[in-house]
Image (cartoon, rainbow, N blue to C red; front, top):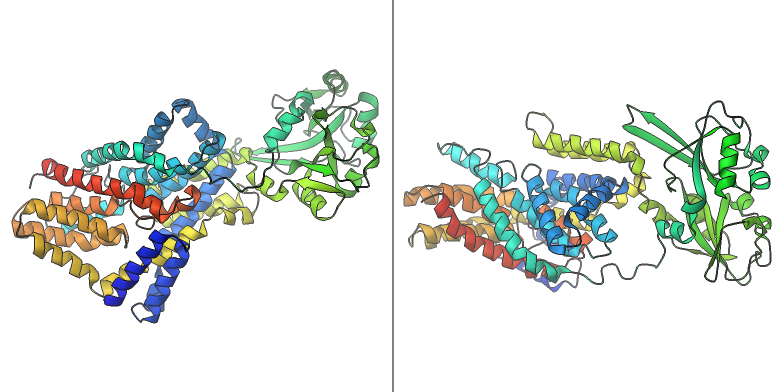
Length: 607
């Protein structure tokens, strides 16, 4: 028992100091418990196979797909439109929406769905997401108090009542309590959340222009038009070389795109390719033509092409980047048409930046100079290749990272269907599929259906530090129970406060549950404390409702630690939080919530 307590205290101290990463501290504590014989290897590793941990992994992948397909960006746009430029309105909207979702979906699932939306929203507004991510995690737990199914401790106390012969709780028995929790949470979090703003979270990243900024700087949208090749067009079956567009019309084909639709447009696939000289034009090809608009229109008319409404430049398979011509480069003094960049690297040059001038017309005749910046276009892997195989130029930015940030917007409807199906399975009990199975299946479907650029991209969305932290801390509950620490604390509480009166005991049960939840899972704490609360109420001959609600509230409203609940751990890395941030904001909220609820519970459920 003493060793377990010492390990727990040392672990908490290391979390507070913050000199060592939280996941390493948790693994060290786990290793000591194994070496001391308190936990068997199987017990110590049980956290890594726990359904909650496995579900967290799957939810990271689902959340990553929501971000990758642009669903998060669309939702963030909507929130920003509703909130306007008012930070308070945005805070309230995020907290309320998250709480409402959390009433029907697990708090872990709620955070995984909302987190990419918040990150996307804050990136677009060029603000740090740290102010909203921790309140997001806390709001998901508060939302769980609105309904019976909102959080597992609610089901635990309902089962305890039924087993003791009392009437069970209805679906909305928790609603009044949940509304009060939400009101207290908003009141406390709104001013405290300003302490979470991290001014340096985004610092240290390599400075590079976004793809949208490059398009804007080189004015690519101004002289690009999209046309679909009709089956009766005279250019069907001709190669790009045979069209001779540069000589005859002073225009060029920037990209050839193919789109296929299946299942009434729900599944949409897009392939992009560069127009090599040998490429044969086929019916239904979409040509992105670059050059003077009058020449483009004349060629389109002669070739019977159909103009497309969407002329936006996308970067699914092909991308753009900038390279700077170095002083010793072989390109210095050459005309652009002599550079052989297309032949050697399968890339096009879309523009040249010289000093503050952007050149996009008559490019083949531009003579290159030292310091010229070329806007190149090609398959992402070819752009990466040009960086590793040539010393004549300097590639600006990281093509692989840029490619991973491109949103696959044409996959958004499919990602939305997968996400909604997952939520439906988690909400409706009559569907005979476990929530963890639904999440794993959803994550797998996101990968195999192409919502990620690659399997590697899906793996990169998983925050392994948070996963290891929560999995390594879960066996601490087993250690506390095996050594009798949990039972000693809970029974000692009843012995000490039972004689003072029901209000003192209610307060003690609430804060003991809250304290235990900081170190073991809220569900395990509720299972441990529910029978103690029930027997205490029976001994005092009072209604057990207030005591059991104190258990579920103490177990769910735990905010002072990053590992007390999975949502707290989920947002830790993305928000750049330390253990001290949770203490700074979560501890005052947890204490105030406890004081308010111990006063309110006897009013809602008379003793």
